[in-house]
Length: 199
Image (cartoon, rainbow, N blue to C red; front, side, top):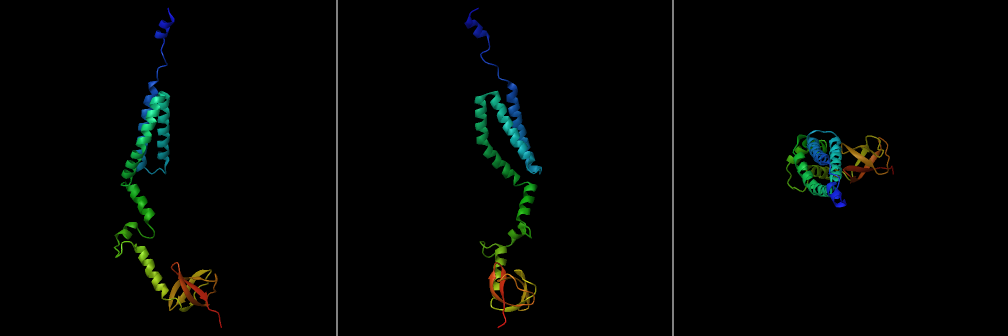
């Protein structure tokens, strides 16, 4: 038998193991299922990590099956992943879990939905900003007035000015309780006061 005949009868290369192709596709399916579950089951990111592991294992299996197929598969996943993630985020934003998380992040003493329903004359001014501006204006009227320290200011405490008990900050850093004070300015929504020295 000639060498040519031996080469023709011998396999030209080892047959590709079809199991790796099935494993790669199965792991991709598993990754997609885990990704969908992550939308509805709060696991603190555990399912997201498992999704990533399954996707990486799927890519590795495809490369073991065939290098060219693996490269094409990887390119397809890289191109399609942003679209899949965008779709997943859009779906997730309408789930009850997402609504609860958004409300908790937006709640700061009141639910965000309540604040959004409040109508303002100027849309650029948020309701909280409007309230802060009104408070600052009311406190500004007290600048130049005298009062007394209701509590010790270290440097923050309470003072009584024009019969009103108001939160204040001491200019010098410390004012004892009962000391006479003068309001010198409004600083970050608080009265800034100075102890009045006896002349």
